[in-house]
Image (cartoon, rainbow, N blue to C red; front, side, top):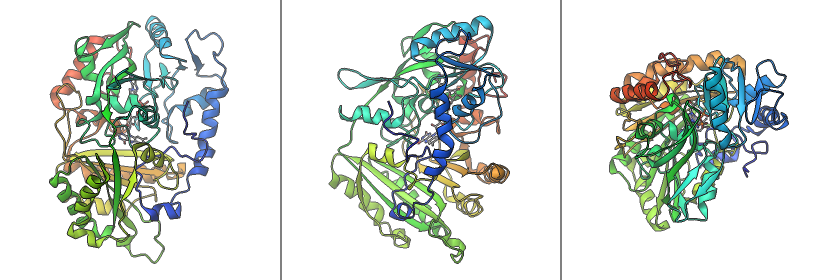
Length: 510
Ligand SMILES: Cc1cc2nc3c(=O)[nH]c(=O)nc-3n(C[C@H](O)[C@H](O)[C@H](O)COP(=O)(O)OP(=O)(O)OC[C@H]3O[C@@H](n4cnc5c(N)ncnc54)[C@H](O)[C@@H]3O)c2cc1C
Protein backbone atom coordinates (compact mmCIF):
# COMPACT_ATOMS: atom_id res chain seq x y z
CA UNK A 1 0.00 0.00 0.00
CA UNK A 2 2.91 2.38 0.46
CA UNK A 3 3.64 4.52 -2.53
CA UNK A 4 7.10 5.21 -1.11
CA UNK A 5 9.18 2.23 -2.07
CA UNK A 6 11.99 1.97 0.45
CA UNK A 7 13.91 -0.40 -1.78
CA UNK A 8 13.92 2.17 -4.52
CA UNK A 9 15.79 5.40 -4.09
CA UNK A 10 14.27 6.49 -0.82
CA UNK A 11 16.13 5.96 2.36
CA UNK A 12 14.56 5.39 5.72
CA UNK A 13 16.24 8.08 7.66
CA UNK A 14 15.71 10.87 10.11
CA UNK A 15 14.36 13.56 7.88
CA UNK A 16 15.11 17.00 9.04
CA UNK A 17 14.83 18.11 5.41
CA UNK A 18 17.29 20.95 5.67
CA UNK A 19 15.84 22.43 2.49
CA UNK A 20 19.06 24.01 1.39
CA UNK A 21 20.48 23.77 -2.08
CA UNK A 22 23.98 23.25 -0.89
CA UNK A 23 22.94 19.98 0.74
CA UNK A 24 21.01 18.88 -2.28
CA UNK A 25 23.73 19.71 -4.82
CA UNK A 26 26.34 17.58 -3.21
CA UNK A 27 23.99 14.66 -2.69
CA UNK A 28 25.58 14.93 0.72
CA UNK A 29 25.32 11.32 1.88
CA UNK A 30 24.31 9.16 -1.02
CA UNK A 31 22.64 6.69 1.23
CA UNK A 32 20.51 4.94 -1.36
CA UNK A 33 23.12 2.29 -1.86
CA UNK A 34 23.21 1.64 1.85
CA UNK A 35 19.48 1.21 1.92
CA UNK A 36 19.37 -1.11 -1.02
CA UNK A 37 22.09 -3.21 0.53
CA UNK A 38 20.64 -3.31 4.00
CA UNK A 39 16.89 -3.11 3.77
CA UNK A 40 16.20 -5.37 0.83
CA UNK A 41 17.04 -8.64 2.60
CA UNK A 42 14.93 -7.49 5.48
CA UNK A 43 11.90 -6.71 3.35
CA UNK A 44 12.44 -9.94 1.47
CA UNK A 45 12.40 -11.89 4.72
CA UNK A 46 8.96 -10.55 5.47
CA UNK A 47 7.52 -11.21 2.05
CA UNK A 48 9.08 -14.62 1.45
CA UNK A 49 8.15 -16.21 4.73
CA UNK A 50 5.17 -18.54 4.42
CA UNK A 51 1.83 -17.38 5.79
CA UNK A 52 1.92 -19.65 8.81
CA UNK A 53 4.99 -21.56 9.84
CA UNK A 54 3.95 -25.05 10.94
CA UNK A 55 1.86 -25.43 14.01
CA UNK A 56 2.61 -22.37 16.08
CA UNK A 57 -1.10 -21.84 16.49
CA UNK A 58 -0.88 -18.05 16.43
CA UNK A 59 -3.07 -16.10 14.03
CA UNK A 60 -1.10 -14.36 11.26
CA UNK A 61 2.49 -15.13 10.28
CA UNK A 62 4.93 -16.24 12.90
CA UNK A 63 8.40 -17.52 13.41
CA UNK A 64 10.02 -19.23 16.43
CA UNK A 65 13.54 -18.92 17.73
CA UNK A 66 15.50 -21.68 16.02
CA UNK A 67 13.45 -21.51 12.78
CA UNK A 68 15.46 -20.88 9.64
CA UNK A 69 14.06 -17.40 9.05
CA UNK A 70 14.09 -16.32 12.67
CA UNK A 71 17.18 -14.11 12.60
CA UNK A 72 16.17 -12.35 9.37
CA UNK A 73 12.77 -11.61 10.90
CA UNK A 74 14.28 -10.45 14.18
CA UNK A 75 16.61 -8.12 12.33
CA UNK A 76 13.72 -6.77 10.26
CA UNK A 77 11.88 -5.61 13.36
CA UNK A 78 14.16 -2.65 14.08
CA UNK A 79 14.10 0.21 11.59
CA UNK A 80 17.76 1.05 12.06
CA UNK A 81 20.85 -1.07 11.37
CA UNK A 82 21.92 -1.55 14.99
CA UNK A 83 19.88 -4.49 16.25
CA UNK A 84 19.80 -4.86 20.02
CA UNK A 85 21.03 -8.31 21.06
CA UNK A 86 17.72 -9.40 22.63
CA UNK A 87 15.90 -12.47 21.36
CA UNK A 88 12.13 -13.02 21.59
CA UNK A 89 11.02 -16.65 21.65
CA UNK A 90 8.48 -16.03 18.92
CA UNK A 91 7.61 -13.20 16.53
CA UNK A 92 4.00 -12.94 15.35
CA UNK A 93 2.77 -10.60 12.61
CA UNK A 94 -1.06 -10.55 12.42
CA UNK A 95 -2.54 -9.96 8.98
CA UNK A 96 -5.19 -7.60 10.31
CA UNK A 97 -6.26 -6.08 13.60
CA UNK A 98 -8.99 -8.66 14.29
CA UNK A 99 -6.23 -11.24 14.75
CA UNK A 100 -4.58 -9.37 17.62
CA UNK A 101 -7.06 -10.51 20.28
CA UNK A 102 -6.37 -14.18 19.47
CA UNK A 103 -2.62 -13.67 19.91
CA UNK A 104 -3.11 -11.95 23.27
CA UNK A 105 -5.54 -14.66 24.51
CA UNK A 106 -3.12 -17.42 23.58
CA UNK A 107 -0.21 -15.65 25.29
CA UNK A 108 -2.29 -15.10 28.43
CA UNK A 109 -3.22 -18.79 28.48
CA UNK A 110 0.40 -19.88 27.97
CA UNK A 111 1.86 -17.29 30.36
CA UNK A 112 3.98 -15.84 27.56
CA UNK A 113 4.80 -12.14 27.92
CA UNK A 114 4.17 -9.75 25.02
CA UNK A 115 6.22 -6.86 23.57
CA UNK A 116 4.46 -4.71 20.95
CA UNK A 117 5.88 -3.05 17.85
CA UNK A 118 4.22 -0.71 15.36
CA UNK A 119 6.95 0.72 13.12
CA UNK A 120 10.11 -0.35 14.97
CA UNK A 121 11.67 3.14 14.86
CA UNK A 122 12.09 3.55 18.59
CA UNK A 123 15.73 3.82 19.55
CA UNK A 124 15.14 1.73 22.71
CA UNK A 125 14.04 -1.22 20.53
CA UNK A 126 11.94 -2.12 23.58
CA UNK A 127 9.94 -4.48 21.36
CA UNK A 128 13.01 -6.77 21.35
CA UNK A 129 13.07 -8.65 24.64
CA UNK A 130 14.77 -11.85 25.67
CA UNK A 131 12.02 -14.46 25.60
CA UNK A 132 8.32 -13.75 25.26
CA UNK A 133 6.44 -12.88 22.09
CA UNK A 134 7.07 -9.93 19.84
CA UNK A 135 3.75 -8.78 18.40
CA UNK A 136 4.59 -7.03 15.13
CA UNK A 137 1.68 -4.81 14.03
CA UNK A 138 3.40 -3.86 10.76
CA UNK A 139 0.43 -4.95 8.60
CA UNK A 140 -2.01 -2.66 10.42
CA UNK A 141 -1.95 0.38 8.14
CA UNK A 142 -5.59 1.19 7.50
CA UNK A 143 -6.97 4.74 7.42
CA UNK A 144 -10.67 5.56 7.72
CA UNK A 145 -11.91 9.14 7.55
CA UNK A 146 -15.12 10.19 9.29
CA UNK A 147 -17.90 11.29 6.93
CA UNK A 148 -17.49 14.96 7.87
CA UNK A 149 -13.67 14.76 7.66
CA UNK A 150 -13.16 16.04 11.20
CA UNK A 151 -11.52 12.88 12.47
CA UNK A 152 -10.03 9.59 11.33
CA UNK A 153 -9.38 6.09 12.61
CA UNK A 154 -5.77 5.17 11.95
CA UNK A 155 -4.09 1.83 12.48
CA UNK A 156 -0.76 1.94 14.32
CA UNK A 157 1.60 1.11 11.45
CA UNK A 158 0.17 3.75 9.10
CA UNK A 159 3.12 5.83 7.91
CA UNK A 160 3.13 9.58 8.46
CA UNK A 161 3.36 10.10 4.72
CA UNK A 162 0.41 7.79 4.03
CA UNK A 163 -1.75 9.68 6.51
CA UNK A 164 -0.93 13.00 4.82
CA UNK A 165 -1.68 11.48 1.43
CA UNK A 166 -5.00 10.08 2.66
CA UNK A 167 -6.02 13.43 4.13
CA UNK A 168 -5.05 15.52 1.15
CA UNK A 169 -8.28 15.25 -0.83
CA UNK A 170 -10.35 16.04 2.24
CA UNK A 171 -8.23 19.19 2.69
CA UNK A 172 -7.18 18.01 6.12
CA UNK A 173 -3.86 17.79 7.90
CA UNK A 174 -2.28 16.29 10.99
CA UNK A 175 0.97 17.00 12.90
CA UNK A 176 2.69 13.83 11.67
CA UNK A 177 6.36 13.04 12.31
CA UNK A 178 9.04 14.83 10.28
CA UNK A 179 9.95 11.50 8.71
CA UNK A 180 7.65 9.83 6.19
CA UNK A 181 8.09 6.29 7.50
CA UNK A 182 7.47 6.92 11.21
CA UNK A 183 4.01 5.47 11.79
CA UNK A 184 1.22 6.77 13.97
CA UNK A 185 1.38 4.11 16.72
CA UNK A 186 4.64 4.63 18.61
CA UNK A 187 4.87 8.27 17.49
CA UNK A 188 1.60 9.32 19.16
CA UNK A 189 1.90 6.95 22.11
CA UNK A 190 5.24 8.62 22.91
CA UNK A 191 3.97 12.19 22.52
CA UNK A 192 4.63 13.17 18.91
CA UNK A 193 6.50 16.33 17.90
CA UNK A 194 5.23 16.73 14.36
CA UNK A 195 4.85 19.36 11.67
CA UNK A 196 3.44 22.63 13.02
CA UNK A 197 3.68 21.19 16.52
CA UNK A 198 3.03 24.42 18.34
CA UNK A 199 -0.25 25.09 16.61
CA UNK A 200 -2.01 21.74 16.26
CA UNK A 201 -2.03 20.94 19.97
CA UNK A 202 1.02 21.38 22.16
CA UNK A 203 1.99 17.79 21.39
CA UNK A 204 0.64 15.32 18.80
CA UNK A 205 -1.03 12.95 21.25
CA UNK A 206 -3.40 15.70 22.36
CA UNK A 207 -5.21 14.97 19.10
CA UNK A 208 -6.13 11.44 20.16
CA UNK A 209 -9.88 11.23 20.77
CA UNK A 210 -10.24 7.51 21.43
CA UNK A 211 -8.63 4.16 20.73
CA UNK A 212 -9.33 0.47 20.41
CA UNK A 213 -7.18 -1.51 22.79
CA UNK A 214 -6.77 -5.24 23.37
CA UNK A 215 -6.24 -5.74 27.11
CA UNK A 216 -4.54 -8.70 28.86
CA UNK A 217 -7.85 -10.64 28.94
CA UNK A 218 -7.73 -10.74 25.15
CA UNK A 219 -10.82 -8.60 24.57
CA UNK A 220 -10.93 -5.43 22.54
CA UNK A 221 -12.11 -2.32 24.41
CA UNK A 222 -12.89 1.22 23.42
CA UNK A 223 -10.82 3.72 25.32
CA UNK A 224 -12.17 7.27 25.44
CA UNK A 225 -12.90 10.07 27.89
CA UNK A 226 -16.05 8.14 28.89
CA UNK A 227 -14.79 4.56 28.77
CA UNK A 228 -11.50 3.61 30.46
CA UNK A 229 -10.31 7.24 30.68
CA UNK A 230 -7.16 6.20 32.59
CA UNK A 231 -6.06 4.17 29.60
CA UNK A 232 -6.73 7.07 27.25
CA UNK A 233 -4.60 9.26 29.50
CA UNK A 234 -1.80 6.63 29.58
CA UNK A 235 -1.65 6.14 25.83
CA UNK A 236 -1.34 9.89 25.29
CA UNK A 237 2.41 10.04 25.63
CA UNK A 238 3.06 7.28 28.20
CA UNK A 239 5.39 5.52 25.75
CA UNK A 240 6.58 1.98 26.12
CA UNK A 241 4.83 1.09 29.40
CA UNK A 242 1.31 0.70 28.02
CA UNK A 243 -0.60 -2.31 29.46
CA UNK A 244 -2.31 -3.43 26.24
CA UNK A 245 -2.17 -3.39 22.43
CA UNK A 246 -3.48 -0.33 20.63
CA UNK A 247 -5.05 -1.58 17.41
CA UNK A 248 -6.61 1.69 16.22
CA UNK A 249 -6.47 5.34 17.16
CA UNK A 250 -9.20 7.89 16.56
CA UNK A 251 -7.57 11.27 15.90
CA UNK A 252 -8.84 14.82 15.42
CA UNK A 253 -7.84 16.42 12.11
CA UNK A 254 -6.98 20.02 11.22
CA UNK A 255 -7.75 22.10 8.13
CA UNK A 256 -4.94 21.82 5.59
CA UNK A 257 -3.02 25.10 5.46
CA UNK A 258 -3.38 26.91 2.15
CA UNK A 259 0.23 28.03 2.18
CA UNK A 260 3.28 26.16 3.45
CA UNK A 261 6.54 28.02 2.92
CA UNK A 262 10.05 27.37 4.16
CA UNK A 263 13.36 29.10 4.43
CA UNK A 264 16.75 28.22 5.86
CA UNK A 265 19.59 30.35 7.19
CA UNK A 266 23.00 28.74 7.23
CA UNK A 267 25.65 29.85 9.73
CA UNK A 268 29.15 28.48 10.09
CA UNK A 269 29.42 26.77 13.47
CA UNK A 270 31.80 29.54 14.59
CA UNK A 271 28.66 31.74 14.72
CA UNK A 272 26.56 29.26 16.67
CA UNK A 273 25.99 31.89 19.37
CA UNK A 274 24.49 34.25 16.76
CA UNK A 275 22.36 31.49 15.28
CA UNK A 276 21.01 30.59 18.72
CA UNK A 277 20.35 34.24 19.50
CA UNK A 278 18.36 34.57 16.26
CA UNK A 279 16.39 31.41 17.03
CA UNK A 280 15.62 32.52 20.59
CA UNK A 281 14.62 36.03 19.52
CA UNK A 282 12.31 34.68 16.89
CA UNK A 283 10.76 32.15 19.27
CA UNK A 284 10.19 34.94 21.80
CA UNK A 285 8.39 36.97 19.11
CA UNK A 286 6.08 33.94 18.93
CA UNK A 287 5.32 34.06 15.21
CA UNK A 288 1.91 32.52 14.55
CA UNK A 289 1.55 29.28 12.57
CA UNK A 290 5.27 28.83 12.24
CA UNK A 291 7.61 26.00 13.08
CA UNK A 292 11.25 26.61 13.94
CA UNK A 293 14.07 24.14 13.97
CA UNK A 294 17.82 24.32 13.93
CA UNK A 295 20.12 21.62 12.68
CA UNK A 296 23.79 21.36 13.65
CA UNK A 297 25.59 19.14 11.19
CA UNK A 298 28.69 18.63 9.07
CA UNK A 299 29.42 21.03 6.25
CA UNK A 300 29.28 18.85 3.13
CA UNK A 301 31.54 21.30 1.26
CA UNK A 302 34.32 21.15 3.85
CA UNK A 303 37.78 20.12 2.70
CA UNK A 304 41.01 19.55 4.63
CA UNK A 305 41.72 23.29 4.32
CA UNK A 306 38.41 24.38 5.82
CA UNK A 307 38.98 26.07 9.19
CA UNK A 308 37.37 24.31 12.19
CA UNK A 309 34.77 27.04 12.67
CA UNK A 310 33.36 26.29 9.20
CA UNK A 311 33.55 22.47 9.22
CA UNK A 312 30.15 22.27 10.86
CA UNK A 313 27.08 24.35 10.22
CA UNK A 314 24.06 25.63 12.08
CA UNK A 315 21.00 25.71 9.84
CA UNK A 316 18.01 27.64 11.19
CA UNK A 317 14.94 26.52 9.33
CA UNK A 318 11.46 28.00 9.48
CA UNK A 319 8.26 26.67 7.98
CA UNK A 320 5.00 28.62 7.93
CA UNK A 321 1.52 27.08 7.76
CA UNK A 322 -0.78 29.97 6.88
CA UNK A 323 -3.82 31.02 4.87
CA UNK A 324 -1.89 32.68 2.02
CA UNK A 325 1.57 32.98 0.49
CA UNK A 326 1.66 36.67 1.40
CA UNK A 327 1.03 35.83 5.08
CA UNK A 328 3.76 33.19 4.94
CA UNK A 329 6.19 35.56 3.30
CA UNK A 330 5.49 38.24 5.90
CA UNK A 331 6.34 35.77 8.69
CA UNK A 332 9.58 34.68 7.06
CA UNK A 333 10.63 38.26 6.31
CA UNK A 334 10.76 38.89 10.05
CA UNK A 335 13.28 36.11 10.44
CA UNK A 336 15.57 37.13 7.61
CA UNK A 337 15.49 40.75 8.76
CA UNK A 338 17.06 39.77 12.08
CA UNK A 339 20.45 41.56 12.34
CA UNK A 340 22.30 38.25 12.83
CA UNK A 341 21.10 37.03 9.43
CA UNK A 342 23.94 38.99 7.79
CA UNK A 343 26.31 36.29 9.09
CA UNK A 344 24.75 33.53 7.02
CA UNK A 345 26.89 31.95 4.31
CA UNK A 346 24.38 30.93 1.64
CA UNK A 347 21.68 32.77 -0.28
CA UNK A 348 18.36 32.89 1.58
CA UNK A 349 15.32 31.87 -0.40
CA UNK A 350 11.66 31.32 0.37
CA UNK A 351 10.31 28.10 -1.04
CA UNK A 352 6.65 27.10 -1.37
CA UNK A 353 6.17 23.56 -0.29
CA UNK A 354 3.51 21.27 1.20
CA UNK A 355 3.24 18.77 4.01
CA UNK A 356 3.42 15.88 1.56
CA UNK A 357 6.42 17.36 -0.22
CA UNK A 358 8.31 17.87 3.01
CA UNK A 359 7.46 14.33 4.02
CA UNK A 360 8.83 12.92 0.76
CA UNK A 361 11.96 15.04 1.10
CA UNK A 362 12.53 13.54 4.53
CA UNK A 363 13.41 10.25 2.89
CA UNK A 364 15.35 11.70 0.00
CA UNK A 365 18.89 10.37 0.40
CA UNK A 366 20.25 13.49 -1.28
CA UNK A 367 18.81 15.77 1.39
CA UNK A 368 18.95 14.14 4.74
CA UNK A 369 21.33 12.91 7.32
CA UNK A 370 21.32 9.32 6.49
CA UNK A 371 20.28 5.89 7.46
CA UNK A 372 22.50 3.51 9.34
CA UNK A 373 23.33 2.58 12.89
CA UNK A 374 21.73 5.10 15.11
CA UNK A 375 21.90 6.31 18.72
CA UNK A 376 20.00 9.18 20.31
CA UNK A 377 19.65 11.21 23.45
CA UNK A 378 17.28 14.12 23.96
CA UNK A 379 16.49 16.77 26.53
CA UNK A 380 14.07 19.62 27.09
CA UNK A 381 15.81 22.77 28.23
CA UNK A 382 14.96 26.31 29.25
CA UNK A 383 18.62 27.35 28.92
CA UNK A 384 19.52 26.91 25.27
CA UNK A 385 21.70 29.99 25.24
CA UNK A 386 23.85 28.63 28.10
CA UNK A 387 24.40 25.43 26.12
CA UNK A 388 26.18 27.13 23.21
CA UNK A 389 29.72 26.11 24.18
CA UNK A 390 28.74 22.54 25.00
CA UNK A 391 26.87 22.15 21.73
CA UNK A 392 29.73 23.67 19.78
CA UNK A 393 32.23 21.36 21.41
CA UNK A 394 30.15 18.22 20.98
CA UNK A 395 29.31 18.80 17.31
CA UNK A 396 32.95 19.64 16.62
CA UNK A 397 33.95 16.26 18.06
CA UNK A 398 31.30 14.36 16.11
CA UNK A 399 32.41 10.78 15.42
CA UNK A 400 30.59 10.58 12.07
CA UNK A 401 29.75 13.04 9.31
CA UNK A 402 26.12 12.07 9.89
CA UNK A 403 26.19 13.04 13.57
CA UNK A 404 23.82 15.94 14.16
CA UNK A 405 21.74 17.90 16.64
CA UNK A 406 18.15 18.99 16.20
CA UNK A 407 17.14 22.03 18.24
CA UNK A 408 13.52 23.06 18.23
CA UNK A 409 11.95 25.84 20.30
CA UNK A 410 8.60 24.99 21.84
CA UNK A 411 6.39 28.04 21.99
CA UNK A 412 3.25 26.20 23.12
CA UNK A 413 4.03 24.22 26.25
CA UNK A 414 0.49 24.00 27.60
CA UNK A 415 0.07 20.24 27.40
CA UNK A 416 -3.36 19.18 28.59
CA UNK A 417 -3.56 17.26 31.87
CA UNK A 418 -5.46 14.61 29.92
CA UNK A 419 -2.06 13.38 28.70
CA UNK A 420 0.54 11.25 30.45
CA UNK A 421 3.02 13.38 28.49
CA UNK A 422 4.02 15.82 31.20
CA UNK A 423 7.61 17.11 31.01
CA UNK A 424 8.42 19.78 28.48
CA UNK A 425 10.81 22.73 28.28
CA UNK A 426 11.23 25.81 26.10
CA UNK A 427 13.45 23.97 23.64
CA UNK A 428 13.89 20.40 22.47
CA UNK A 429 17.52 19.37 21.94
CA UNK A 430 18.21 16.01 20.31
CA UNK A 431 21.69 14.54 19.82
CA UNK A 432 21.76 11.95 17.03
CA UNK A 433 24.71 9.98 15.88
CA UNK A 434 24.36 7.89 12.75
CA UNK A 435 27.10 5.70 11.30
CA UNK A 436 27.60 2.79 8.94
CA UNK A 437 30.18 0.43 10.27
CA UNK A 438 29.83 -1.87 13.26
CA UNK A 439 33.49 -1.25 14.06
CA UNK A 440 32.52 2.37 14.81
CA UNK A 441 29.92 1.41 17.45
CA UNK A 442 32.23 2.12 20.39
CA UNK A 443 33.27 5.56 19.14
CA UNK A 444 29.69 6.62 18.51
CA UNK A 445 28.25 5.29 21.77
CA UNK A 446 31.14 6.91 23.60
CA UNK A 447 30.45 10.26 21.94
CA UNK A 448 26.78 10.03 22.86
CA UNK A 449 27.62 9.22 26.44
CA UNK A 450 29.96 12.24 26.66
CA UNK A 451 27.31 14.39 24.99
CA UNK A 452 24.81 13.21 27.57
CA UNK A 453 27.13 14.33 30.36
CA UNK A 454 27.65 17.69 28.64
CA UNK A 455 23.96 18.40 27.99
CA UNK A 456 22.16 16.98 30.99
CA UNK A 457 23.15 19.73 33.42
CA UNK A 458 20.81 21.90 31.29
CA UNK A 459 17.94 19.40 31.22
CA UNK A 460 14.39 20.04 32.36
CA UNK A 461 13.38 16.54 31.36
CA UNK A 462 13.60 14.07 28.52
CA UNK A 463 11.41 12.95 25.59
CA UNK A 464 10.10 9.39 25.94
CA UNK A 465 10.00 8.83 22.16
CA UNK A 466 13.73 9.47 21.87
CA UNK A 467 15.53 8.04 24.87
CA UNK A 468 17.33 4.73 24.99
CA UNK A 469 15.69 3.11 28.00
CA UNK A 470 18.11 0.17 28.00
CA UNK A 471 21.35 2.16 27.94
CA UNK A 472 19.85 4.68 30.40
CA UNK A 473 17.20 2.92 32.48
CA UNK A 474 16.64 6.10 34.51
CA UNK A 475 15.61 8.04 31.40
CA UNK A 476 11.90 7.12 31.17
CA UNK A 477 11.23 8.54 34.62
CA UNK A 478 12.82 11.82 33.47
CA UNK A 479 10.13 12.09 30.81
CA UNK A 480 7.22 12.49 33.23
CA UNK A 481 6.15 14.60 36.17
CA UNK A 482 6.37 12.61 39.39
CA UNK A 483 2.58 12.39 39.66
CA UNK A 484 2.28 11.16 36.05
CA UNK A 485 5.02 8.58 36.63
CA UNK A 486 3.18 7.26 39.71
CA UNK A 487 -0.14 7.21 37.85
CA UNK A 488 1.39 5.33 34.91
CA UNK A 489 2.57 2.60 37.28
CA UNK A 490 -0.81 2.46 39.02
CA UNK A 491 -2.55 2.18 35.65
CA UNK A 492 -0.27 -0.70 34.66
CA UNK A 493 -0.89 -2.51 37.95
CA UNK A 494 -4.65 -2.07 37.58
CA UNK A 495 -5.01 -3.19 33.97
CA UNK A 496 -2.18 -5.70 33.77
CA UNK A 497 -1.62 -7.10 37.27
CA UNK A 498 0.08 -10.24 35.94
CA UNK A 499 2.53 -8.20 33.81
CA UNK A 500 1.57 -9.85 30.53
CA UNK A 501 2.93 -6.83 28.66
CA UNK A 502 6.54 -5.78 29.01
CA UNK A 503 7.02 -2.29 30.42
CA UNK A 504 9.93 0.09 30.95
CA UNK A 505 13.17 -1.84 31.50
CA UNK A 506 14.65 -2.00 35.00
CA UNK A 507 11.66 -0.45 36.76
CA UNK A 508 10.25 -3.66 38.14
CA UNK A 509 7.96 -3.89 35.09
CA UNK A 510 10.60 -4.64 32.47
C1 LIG B 1 13.87 8.43 11.32
C2 LIG B 1 13.14 8.86 12.53
C3 LIG B 1 12.49 10.07 12.54
C4 LIG B 1 11.78 10.47 13.66
N1 LIG B 1 11.14 11.68 13.64
C5 LIG B 1 10.43 12.06 14.72
C6 LIG B 1 9.72 13.29 14.72
O1 LIG B 1 9.73 14.05 13.76
N2 LIG B 1 9.01 13.61 15.83
C7 LIG B 1 8.94 12.79 16.92
O2 LIG B 1 8.26 13.11 17.88
N3 LIG B 1 9.59 11.61 16.94
C8 LIG B 1 10.33 11.24 15.87
N4 LIG B 1 11.00 10.05 15.91
C9 LIG B 1 10.88 9.19 17.09
C10 LIG B 1 9.64 8.29 16.94
O3 LIG B 1 8.47 9.06 17.15
C11 LIG B 1 9.67 7.17 17.98
O4 LIG B 1 10.79 6.37 17.73
C12 LIG B 1 8.39 6.35 17.93
O5 LIG B 1 8.31 5.55 19.08
C13 LIG B 1 8.34 5.49 16.69
O6 LIG B 1 7.09 4.88 16.52
P1 LIG B 1 7.04 3.33 16.13
O7 LIG B 1 5.61 3.02 15.86
O8 LIG B 1 8.03 3.01 15.09
O9 LIG B 1 7.44 2.72 17.55
P2 LIG B 1 7.95 1.23 17.83
O10 LIG B 1 9.43 1.26 17.79
O11 LIG B 1 7.24 0.27 16.97
O12 LIG B 1 7.43 1.04 19.32
C14 LIG B 1 7.99 1.70 20.40
C15 LIG B 1 7.34 1.21 21.67
O13 LIG B 1 6.01 1.74 21.76
C16 LIG B 1 5.10 0.77 22.24
N5 LIG B 1 4.09 0.54 21.19
C17 LIG B 1 4.23 0.82 19.87
N6 LIG B 1 3.09 0.55 19.23
C18 LIG B 1 2.23 0.07 20.15
C19 LIG B 1 0.88 -0.37 20.08
N7 LIG B 1 0.21 -0.35 18.93
N8 LIG B 1 0.29 -0.80 21.22
C20 LIG B 1 0.96 -0.79 22.39
N9 LIG B 1 2.23 -0.37 22.52
C21 LIG B 1 2.87 0.06 21.40
C22 LIG B 1 5.91 -0.46 22.55
O14 LIG B 1 6.23 -0.46 23.93
C23 LIG B 1 7.18 -0.29 21.72
O15 LIG B 1 8.31 -0.88 22.30
C24 LIG B 1 11.74 9.64 14.80
C25 LIG B 1 12.41 8.42 14.80
C26 LIG B 1 13.13 8.03 13.68
C27 LIG B 1 13.87 6.74 13.69
